[in-house]
Image (cartoon, rainbow, N blue to C red; front, side):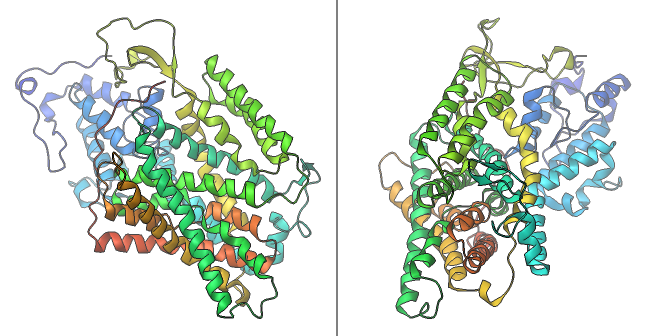
Length: 575
């Protein structure tokens, strides 16, 4: 039912606000019917906030998988509060949600500002679903599965390394064989995680790149993408240069004179230092910059491009030991054509793209000797953000940008909510739905990926020059390369950093980018077949997590201001 307008003095003047900037709603302005309506309306928490989503788009926007979902939730709540009366109970939950995004004390179980004699904020969770969504939020924000997977893998490898290798199939000669192969690749648990699961990981990452490049996105127009892409180039060449420099300096000093391996074999690890771990880098950046800083999106683009660069390096510089045929790459072209046809015929669900085009791209890459985890990176760009519908807008005076729909459930067209973008009537496309529906699955799957790849036996052989070189190249090489190339890019006319970023932010972004974990572990397995060298490279990738504390300390010393309010919103991405 539609909200009843306020009457009297309250309608003539805005409500006073409290210390948090939240309007205070006097109790005498709220009738019993209005309380009942609003409580029923907000019976279930969405995936991120304390407001029930009105439609599919709000459900996606409020998901914990989005970069700044809390601020979208605040915007929705504040907008509704101007036109809808709310109960004191809902107003209390409103304050809880606001403080939840403003201060992290909520996660530590106590925030004195939420009490007012009323106890813990979690008392506003009224169903098991509330607790499930709360736990899911913690898991998503702090990447708990990935961290648990790393810890469990290290413990397992140091308790029984032979059993660890046998179960996960990291050694072709001493591993569980599932009894069949695909394109001459024996199928093991390690193969399933690194070649199949990681395809979804990079597919989700590609969604953010596509959204950023669409009109109104963080990297649109194209001129805005030049600086981060040049920084990405520096983030690739810088670590590689540092790695080779250290290796040749150590060779000249006689560090490898007694090594049982050829120097050319030692140099194979240069690809390990290329990639940035997207999830951990994002988490560290939110601590340093705040959750709404423009540096977050800048870093995300850097990290994704770095990881794609890492996969391309595997494809071209670490050829598969299995039989391959480059003609299978035409299957990838076929996959792109299939995805294009799905877009032309306006297929609305992402599953069509993944089920029809995904396998073609995946098998084509695998059979041609290219790492198959890149498959969905070829398919995702064809998924539209919006799908045009045939009928014109009902009223020429309708807004030309996507706006929040009527919060009254009776007027919501579910599940395909229509919106007007650039004067054209559209419905939501599969691009963000794919991200929303698969992100939690990917987050949980990172536990098994880390478990299968992070196991390193802490022996004397695991700590060597390769370990040292990987750590130094990732932390310092990334910082030097990104900052240098970024500074050079800023000398070019009409090029600049995103609004709110300066040279200090660019420097710290370079430090944060030194975290290499997920893709670095994949590259390590492709670079080194010798167990001793592999363990050294994997340990170096794990120790690169030290870039996190370094970046946080630099943020404190350099007094980097955290941005905890949403940046000005631009026009929505076009179809």
